[in-house]
Length: 157
Image 1 (spheres, rainbow, N blue to C red):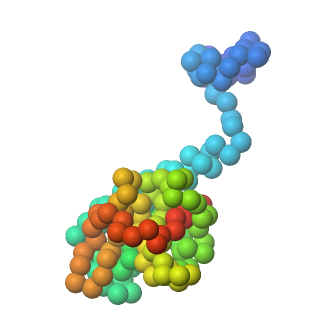
Image 2 (cartoon, one colour):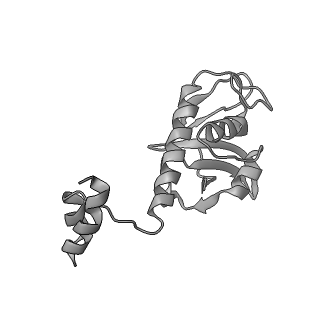
Image 3 (cartoon, rainbow, N blue to C red):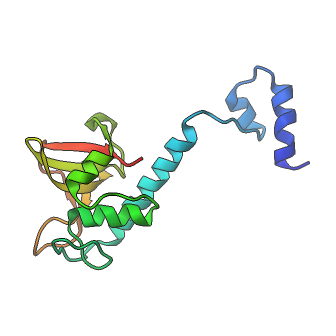
């Protein structure tokens, strides 16, 4: 009997057994919303890996890769390689993300730097208060500590 054929009989025999018990005996349970959350996490982790792989690539204003980037060009490129389309500029990207609090941020979320209500820079959160980003002319794609509290966070859906 294949694993797929066993699931219905396991479900029938389990009755009110917990999901953990079913998992332990090889069953599976679908939880609404979980697949979406899992695929978002996978997309974000892929985008983060792509950004990290561009370490040392030179900054160029308006560049979207694969060899040179500006800040939003790096995020656009990284998420495109992970299967998600983002708009071109940091401000447009902010408007297309699901806004989250700093306490809910996760690796792979976007970090938007702002002055008042104007977004002027974006990077990909790497965890531990750091981002991968393309900082400015004369610099390269690199991992850097977030240097200000004037940031907002967005999750790519």
